[in-house]
Structure formats: structure tokens, C-alpha cells
Image (tube, rainbow, N blue to C red):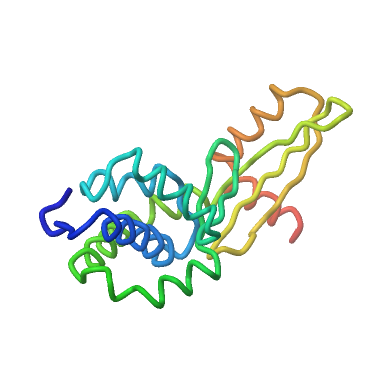
Length: 180
């Protein structure tokens, strides 16, 4: 653990780490993946991987966080109860740690934001088809959302992969075509 985190007990460390997770997600302003949470908390040596997973699970169970699955990513977002808890206990996070988190978010904001501004996912249907949902967002608002039905899983996967790299181009072409 970081030197500034010498705790008087395991309960305090547990509470501090949970508050840090809430603070990081709230300040990011959008849901974060396990990898994104790990990038800060593990690399900065605030906790270990297994403890982080335990904290996340406990916070979901306590309804401080909610999880959603998009493609192969699980994203964690703060709930209303999580916001209230953070607001009440925010002063328990040392300013130096808050500063570290804010600097991390500033230095990585484009990587964090761009990773989930463009998402695609597919859902198998009972009839054997696949429903593909592709979304591109800007400032948490949908720019474009396309829903497709395909017959093969390979097609669904190919569309999801292509959407990540071609969504901006598709959006521009569609907009241009509609405005002609």
C-alpha cells in the first residue's frame, strides 16, 4: 500500500478504497471498466486486484454501484445511493489522493472517453438470428444508433468490430446522404 495510506485498521482501508472507487467514477462523469479502475488503483498501489474485485462486488450488492455489460466490457457506474454516500463521506479521502485521481483522469480523459463513446454489441435471438446494436455518442448523447438483424454470429461479430473503427465515417456518410 502507498505510504500515505497507513491505516489504523482494515475497516478504514476498506472504506477508503470504496470511497476512492466512487470518487473516481463520479469525477470521470461516465461509467468505467474494471481495467480503467485497475489502471489507477493498482498501478498507483492503493490496493491489490483481488481486494478491488471484492470491493466492486460489495458495492454492487450494497447498490452503491451498478454494472452493465457492453460488448465484452463490464462497466461500473455510480448509483444515486453511491453519490449520496460519496457526498457524505468525501472528506474522508485525503486531498493528496483526490488530487492523484483528478490528475489521472485529466491525463487519461481521451482514452477513457473514447473507449466507450463508440460501442457495439449483439444479442442472439430465439429464431437463430442476431440483433446487433451499434451506438456512437458525444457528451453522453447518441449521435447515431443503428440496429441490425443478421443471420450469422460471424456477421454480428464482424459488424461489432467494424463499428469501432468505421463509426465516424458511417455517421458522416449517412448525414451527407440525408442532407443531399
